Image (cartoon, rainbow, N blue to C red; front, side, top):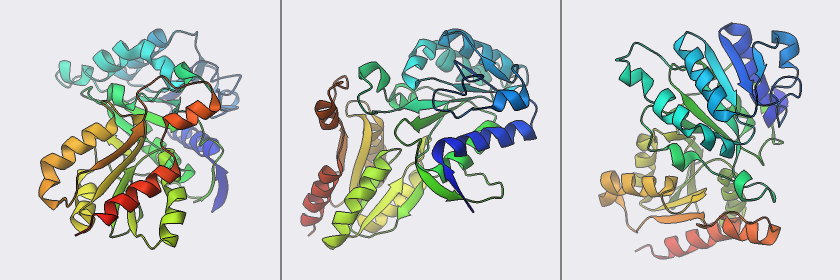
Length: 327
């Protein structure tokens, strides 16, 4: 085991996969000489050359289109978005090209590409740099969507995403890059379609992902002192949802709270509620509770920014209210 920082876990994943497979390459703004906006690709250009760690112009639609073409022709591109919000400029290339070409070509093309980078609400980054794009792309057929949350799952999931033959949107949270964790020294991979049971429990199922995993674990410290026994599940896979793991938990707890940083209207939580009600309605002893971000552009002001997203004390209050309804 070795202590590893989150951004270095991602770097290790890319380095290992580039060493394993010469068709893997990285492209994006400042990924080469600068080493990426959060140093995930630091010094990789020295090892693999400037064609495999390719600095691009500030033109997301162009270099994403280039990556789709490269994937069609047998390469495995990894796009780094300097900020995931900027990839809205490449929505057409991600949705109509990457997501659909394997189907519209009758299976003649594979699109093995990863689109990764920082997103989420940071610390006073302003509205345009605080985007959560997972819900924007959730309805697009052909995409896989993954949200990592720890150095361990970041590395294992990214390695699996690079080897997958389909386009994977790989969401990292801007405030998690400095997390540290002991990682195995041997290679490992993690499945892209499985949730993680972070803590087993019997009182209520808490479904969360990305940075909100850590807000939920902060809330857990208070909840355990008060005698509550929540089951915490990190979704990890946002498309497809791991409904088997979710369903098994609901059959045990019969209560669900969703904690997300996504916006309330049309967010990941909205799809979760629909899926849970369709499949597990008879197992529920109470309506599903959803804790989501406010439906407003994220303010720059720090105090207002904090008020727009879910805080640990809100999670504690939601659990207290839900378990109090137990009959």
